Amino acid sequence: MKKKSEAPTTELILISISGDDRPGVTSALTEILARYDAFILDIGQADIHHTLSLGILFKTDSSVSGDIMKDLLFKAYELDVKLSFSPVSVEEYNDWVGRQGKNRWIITILGRRLTARQIALVTEIVADQNLNIDGIRRLTGRMPLDKMEEPKSKSCVELSVRGNPRDRNEMQLQFMKIAAEEEFDISLQEDTMYRRCRRLICFDMDSTLIETEVIDELADRAGVGDKVKAITASAMRGEIDFSESFARRVALLKGLDESVMKEIAENLPITEGVDRLMEVLKRAGYKIAILSGGFTYFGNYLKQRFGIDYVYANNLEIVDGKLTGRYLGDIVDGKRKAELLKLIAQVENVNIAQTIAVGDGANDLPMLATAGLGIAFHAKPKVKANAGQSISTIGLDGVLYFLGFKDSYIS
Image (tube, rainbow, N blue to C red; front, top):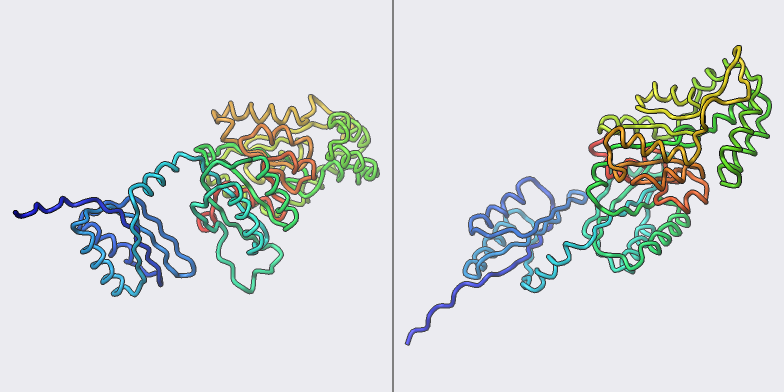
């Protein structure tokens, strides 16, 4: 009695291709799969120094799987690439699909230059937290060997990881510790839809957009520099109330000629990376605000220079061309900065999760905590310890990498 032939079963096959990258490799291999009506379940490709790494997971009938593999091997030989097969069980595939619901995190590693040790330390923490790295991509451009030691160089890679960390707070503390010890910056963000569609960014001004505290510059011209700097430093460390320190410092400026403000504004030391950062943010459609405990006069100067949308700062009282030692209106302190961030977000119809705040001082902490992404920039230890993210090794355009921008499409 003749046996009935068995019905074809489904096979899941992972092919891995490597070799010199050239146009047409992916097209040629997928054309073979199409010829046999194979169904592609997953595909990924990377190019590292002209070397191709391509993976394709496909589903097909067992009746044609042998022919598919034979044709793929012949084509790989023609293309001079290496091709290997791995069978995948239904159980393994279903387990992989089941992990798709887990949280995804983005870890950004940033510095003047990145070393194998720095990356090893970060990935060790990732593994200890039982997270799996799904992908790694370089955000900065390729750097010529003879320029790697330049003082303004920068290097950034982004890790996409999946899973639920055992202890996110502990992981964040470990990241901060190794970043401080090894002199690089690191950002940990949950990969939500809001991370990909930020719309409003608010900056502190003094020691953030500019490399000075304007009140110190004014004080130097008034001959009270040492007194004001001592109060400023104490306030930035969070040792004294900002509003009290502000009133005390402004009082010391009494009698200073108004013309001094123009001279200082025209010579403000702009922080490294600000020009590039502002150009990209404006091109990408961001709304930009200055929320500063400094002075409106200088904020308006930066507003005109960079096309900033909002400026909220403090107004100095001027009578007969002289500073009176008093200020007008309410002081823009830490609490007020957070309120203004929420107000601007409301006016612009932006979800608070789509906002970014960048600052360096203790009075910036409330707005850093309020924003969807708070970044401490070259900040005091207390600020870095309480902020979610920090940049301490490169210029302000490092913010772009925390937002996922690549040099290749912002240069």
